Every structure is written in C-alpha cells, then in structure tokens.
Image 1 (tube, rainbow, N blue to C red):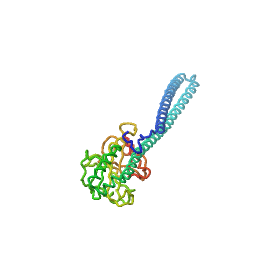
Image 2 (image 1 turned 180 degrees about the vertical axis):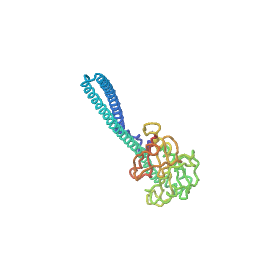
Image 3 (image 1 turned 120 degrees about the vertical axis):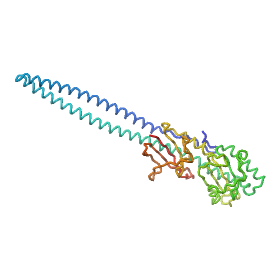
Image 4 (image 1 turned 90 degrees about the vertical axis):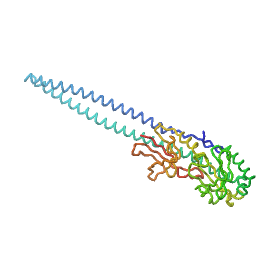
Length: 360
C-alpha cells in the first residue's frame, strides 16, 4: 500500500466492522419477516371479512324468506338474526385485529428502521475514526523524521558553514534519505533568512537559492524554542514543487545538533500529501458509490476526498453540537458521520476530521 513507511510502517487498512454489518443484516431480516407477518395478517383478516359478508348475505336472505313464510318462519327469523349478529361481531373483531396488527407491525418496522440507521451511522463514525487515525499515525512519523534529520551531522555542518563542499555533501545525504523515504517530494535545508541552500532533488526541482521566508511554516519554524519542537504546515499546493499538494513539516537545525543549541537553520520536509491521503479515503469500505469519504482540516476545508472533488477549495458544513464525533441526517436527507483527530502518541493532531457523507 502507498502508505507504508520505511522506518515504522503504519499501513493498516481500514478495519472491517463485522459486528455492525451483522446487526444491519439481522435488522434487514427482521424487517422482512415483520413485513411478511403483516401481509399474512392482512390477507387472513380480509378472508374473514369475506366470509362474514357471505354470512350477512345468507342471514339477510333468510330473513327475507322467513318474512314471506309468515308465522311459520318466525322462529327461523330469530336464528337468521342471530347469525347476522354473529357475522357482524366477527367482522368487528377482524377489523380490530387488522388495525392493531397494522399499527404494531408498523411501529416495529419503524423501530427496526431507526435501529438500522443507528447501526449504519455508528459504523460510518467508526470508519471516519479509522481514516483520521491512519493519517495521524503517518503524520506522527513525519514529526519524528524532521526532528531526527535536523540533527544529522551533514545537515548541521551545512547550516553552520554553507560552503560548496558542505552543501554538496548534505545534498547527497538528503538524496539518500529520499531514496529510502519515498513518501516525500523533497527536503529543503534553509538558512535563517529563508534561503534554500540545499535540497535532495535538485535534478528535479530547481529550488536552490529561492527564498521562502514569506511562508507561514517557515516563519513559525524560525521561532521554535528547541530542537524537540516542530511545525506542521497546512496542506497546500507548493508552486516550487510543480504545484503538488504537500504537507510541510519543519524543525530547527541547531548548533552541534543539540536540542538546546542556537538555531542556525530550518529543515523543511514536504510530504507527498495527495497520493497518501487518496490511498486512505479510497481504501475506506463504504456501502455504495453515493457515499463520500473526506478528510477535512480545522477550517472544514476538504483536504482529501474519495471522489476527488473539492480538494483544497471546498468547505463543508458540519453540525457538531460540541461533540468530537457523531452522526446525523441533514436537511437533504444525507447521513453524515464525523470523528475528530484523536492524535497519536506525542502528535496531538491539527484539529482535522474524518467525515463520511452518505447521500439520500
């Protein structure tokens, strides 16, 4: 899978939710059986009503004949009237039975539908959590990578003494790292003024000498307090990398490679976001092609989408009501499930959400 990491692999696919699927299957079975019982009950009560109608007709005919018979038919008229009364009572019982059965089975089917919707919603929340957890685990690795590589002796030497020899050496070193860590587009070593002094893919991206001091992630990285701290930039298109979608992580390069040393540069690593995120959202198992799997940032901007629509441009509306996770039905009838980033180990996450939208 694309998400496999070279140092510590976190390539687990979205977990199957067999228990929720079983509940949905059982609910569907109960709904079907309930519908069949309701159909049988209605059929039998209609049969009873048909018989009672025949009884009433026979009783009516008997009354007519008894009236013609005069005094001799008086006793028969009493019997005919009783038969008529019995028929009416049976008809009333049949109507009441049909009414009660229809009401009860209707209520039962409504309850089953609600239970099925709840089961589906909970499953979607689980899948949303699974998606955001996968990206959290992978981005936790990025925070480890950038802080580790910022202490590499070649990186520290080039930041301290950026002559042609040290820059050539660190460029080779960065290229070796990129050869093993294929989830990155490029690694940039910058001086404290924001000038890119070395890269790992100079043959592909002619960025050396460019100044990125105006970027928010560099400004934040420049004021990091220690080598243990890092900056996680928003997912964005990077013009210097062919307008590719990247998630940029930065750490400060410090004198002697020590966490409390003086900051002498910034290492920026550009995670190949689009390919990795697409593998996650497309890997989530959903019921049908109407279901949309999303990753959104803290501003609810779409940063990954299973249908490839709205990337970095569309914002969704999410009714959270103070919850970190849940599901609900919107005005259009779509079922929406979400789960906030739980973070992973020392990575607290960036306030992102996994979101799944099932169209009506």
